[in-house]
Length: 167
Image (cartoon, rainbow, N blue to C red; front, side):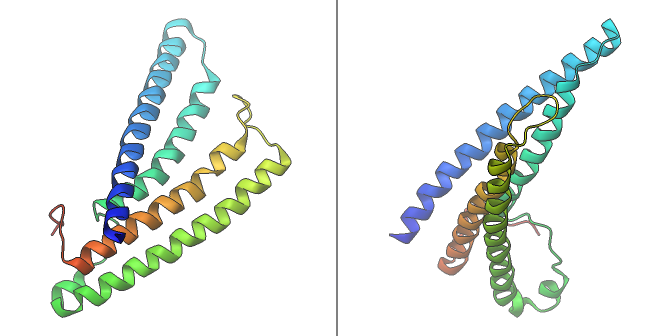
């Protein structure tokens, strides 16, 4: 039952990650291209495109963390595992638990930061987008990372490997 729930959440998260990253980056590239054309072709710059690109970079960085957990390509030092192969499971478990703690902190503190932005009604300087939307990325990504880590831990426990792990 737990494995089935994780499989469904994995499918939903993969869809959300892939499509939102695709769409936001395409929009940012179009805005950046339009800004370059305006700057060099008409000697006029679009200020909002730079703010949009900055927000897309923030979004893609956070969502990319969730995708990195799925592909098990988080930054790590694996020299100890190569020297002592028997420590692979305990160190993997420790690493996953540390990721769960980090994801929980992102959920908690990100929620507090988003709540503060909601109360103060702050908006971005140029596009006038409420900053609560930008700050909500943190707790949402924390939930995604938490679910992804649970999925990876379940795969490790069950001995499954959906994708070959990098060496």
